[in-house]
Image (cartoon, rainbow, N blue to C red; front, side, top):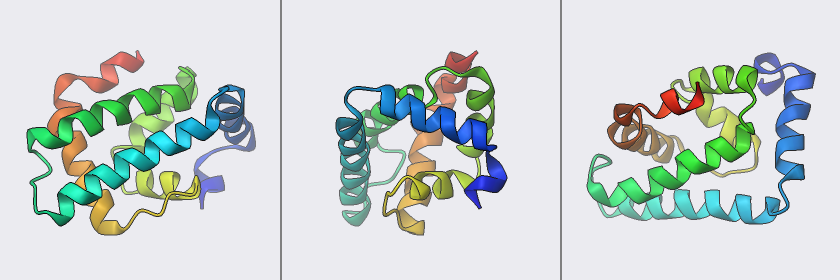
Length: 124
């Protein structure tokens, strides 16, 4: 499915952006920390809009910027994906074990803390 969303060249760009990043392993660990933290809050019934989720979403914003490498074409496509159900598939494709419930929580927190602050304007 991911191949239907991205061309082979775009997939290679994504992979190169991660591989060229000297701390690729740390990058994965940082995403894992974001989702583990959000999952803990979700399990403890903390609303996604609560300020406790804000630091995790700020980290997610930074990680998305590293992921795209500020490639404008890729960024435009990811902008759409991260606002759709396909965003979960993109992250799952990278090896993250994200339940549907956790991804919905992530989306709610994203909308509450990042989208309202004009996050995607940073991509322009």
